[in-house]
Image 1 (cartoon, helix red, strand yellow):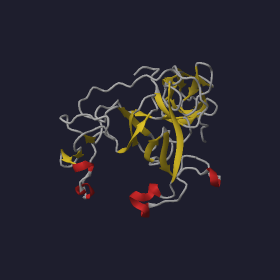
Image 2 (cartoon, rainbow, N blue to C red; image 1 turned 60 degrees about the vertical axis):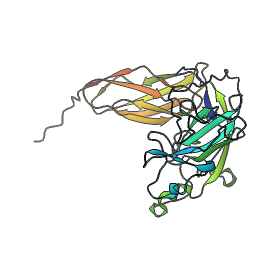
Image 3 (tube, one colour; image 1 turned 45 degrees about the vertical axis):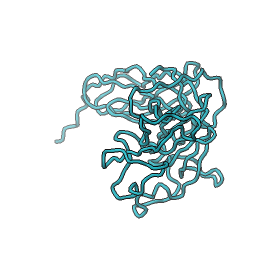
Length: 311
C-alpha cells in the first residue's frame, strides 16, 4: 500500500491540514466482502434506501449456501443453535451506514476486532473497498491496546463514531486505562464484556499518516553472558514531533513498551555467547506510519569470574 495512503482516524484531536483523501481501491474480488449480498441479476437503484431492488440473500455458514430474505426480513432460522452467517476469514459485521467522511455520500461498513475497528467503503453495497483498520489517536480508545472485547457494535452516524465499552467514565473521574471498569468473572459467561458498558463517541476523519523514524540507543555494546543492557527507543515524525503508542523492543526476546513523549526505555537480558542484535519496531498506529530502527550489535563474552575454592 502507498505510504501516504489516507486512513480513517478516530479521536478528538486538533484539526491540521491534511493531504487530499486517496480513493481506496477494490481488491478485485467478484464476491462482496460482507455476509449479505444481492444477486447479480438485480439492478442497483439509487432511489432505494439501500440501493437495491429485489430480495437480498444471507449467507449460511453451516449450510454453505445463500438464504432468501423476503422483503429484507432475516429468516427465523438464524436464531437456531449452531447457525452462523459469517464468511470464513472475515470479521462479524457490526453496522452499515451512510457517510460523507470522504467528501461524497457512500456507505461504510464497520466490524469490531475485539479492541479495534475495521471498515470498508462502498457506493452500491455490492462492491467494497479492501478491509482497513481505523487509526485511533486516543490511547486505549479502539487503538488495539485496551482489554479484549472493549469495542462493541461500532456504528457511524453523521460522521460520528459510536460504540459500547466499559473503559473510563469522566463523569465519575474514572480514567481510561485499558482495563474493564467492572469486576467480572466466569459466572457472566459470554455476556461479561457487556457488564457496565456505556456509549462512547468520537469524531472520524480521513488523514495522511505521518512518516516516522525510530532510533535505538544502548548503554553498552559488550557485556558478559547473563548480564543486561539498558536500551531506549526514540520515535518521532519528520518534523521531530514525538509519536505515541507502543514500540516493540527486540533482542533475545520481544518486549512491548509504551512510548512516553516519544521515548521508551527497557532493560533487556542477554544470554548466549557471540553477537546478538537489538532493534525497535514501531507498528503503524494512531497518526503515524510504521518504522524500524537499525540493528545494534551486542557482543556477549564469557563470564570468566571463578568461584573461590573451598578447603
